[in-house]
Length: 233
Image 1: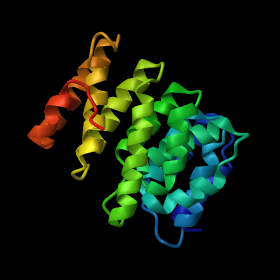
Image 2: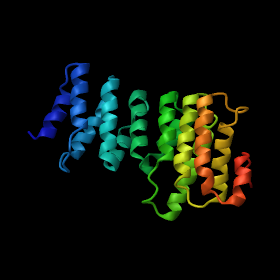
Image 3: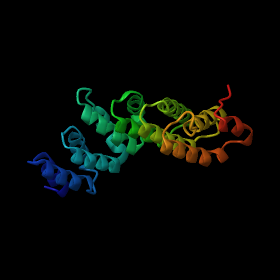
Image 4: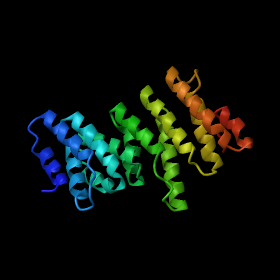
C-alpha cells in the first residue's frame, strides 16, 4: 500500500479520539499525488462529520491545502441533518476561496446559529478568488459577496461584525471601479467605526483601519459622502 493509502487507512481504523487526531494530522500534511487526491479528499471530508473537533480542524487545514479540487466533494457531502459537518465545511470553503462555495457562505453568514461559523463565512466572502472569472461573472459574484457582508454588519455578535470588517476590507482591495459599490462598502465601515452605532471598541478600531486603508482607492469626488457614511443613489 502506498504511504497515502496507509494514512487513509489509519484514519478510518483509528480506535480513539487521540489516534484519530494524529492520523488526520498526518494525512492532512501529506503531499498527495494525483492518483490518490480523490481518496484523501474523501477521507478528510468524512472526518468533518466525526465528533472530534481536533481532527476536524486538521481535516479543514488539509482540505484548504488541497484547494479547489476539494470543493465539489465538500459540497456533495453536505447533509442538513449533520450540523457539525456543515459548519466545518463552511470553514473549509471559506479558506479555499472558490466561488463555487458562494451559496453556502452567503447562507451561513445570514443564518447559521454558530457565531464562529458566521465569522468564517464573513472572512471567506471577502477573499473569494475572483481573478479567474469572466468580467460579468466576476461583477455578479462581487456584488453578491458585498450584499452578504453588508447584511452581516447587523449581526448581533461582535466577533462576526469584526470579521465583516475584515471581509469588507479584503473585498474592497479587489473591487474594480464601481462607484456605488465603493460607497456602500465605505459607508458600512464608517458605520461600524462610529461609537454611536457600534458598542464594541475592537470592532470600531478594525473598521476604522479598513476604512483608512480603502479610502485612498476611491476617487476624491466620491470619498466625502462615503466617509460620512452616506450612499449616493
